[in-house]
Length: 275
Image (tube, rainbow, N blue to C red; front, side, top):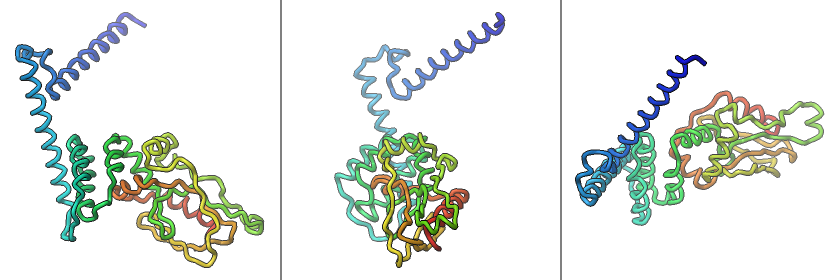
């Protein structure tokens, strides 16, 4: 490495240090805790504490009013229900610190739905949403885009594969028993683990077996609707299931159909079902 390259690297390091110092000062100023870094050090701690609290409360007030404004956009003329005061206290306690426009829209949507159908969202769901980062919200969006509702159960499921172990079927067909690679559809395994740790999706695979032969089984994938019947008693389906919290929060996420995933899904369904 030349002397010039070394000097360049040193300059970059110094630039990063300066940027870190500038960022520290900006964060401290925004939060009202920069008193000992600036000329404000001549004021008292008590005075600066009062200023900081006022500053925080103004910001929280702005956040809450912004969320209420967004909730108003989701409200309609449907008769509302009395909202639980304890739920409302918990909601406001968490919502006051939500400052990002996207997350404020989600919280506004929750507020509107709770007003029209009290009990739509548990406090546990609010806490989970409050802990989620923007990146985790994007992971959850990807999971919702792969989810289906099967039968008359409103619970969301991500189908992994469908199998038919009937000997005569296996003799004349070459079914795909390998599970769908969710990573190809924007849900890699590490994202799945993150969502599982957040309590949004059950970690273990589940299996649907012993399905009735004479009954229709509807499946809904976004705007796609299919009606199926099992081929025989050996038909089975493996899937990941959303938790109750995952189902509640999924109401907030507009489903975006993934044509490639749907094509792969129907290919697997044909192993075990007739359409």
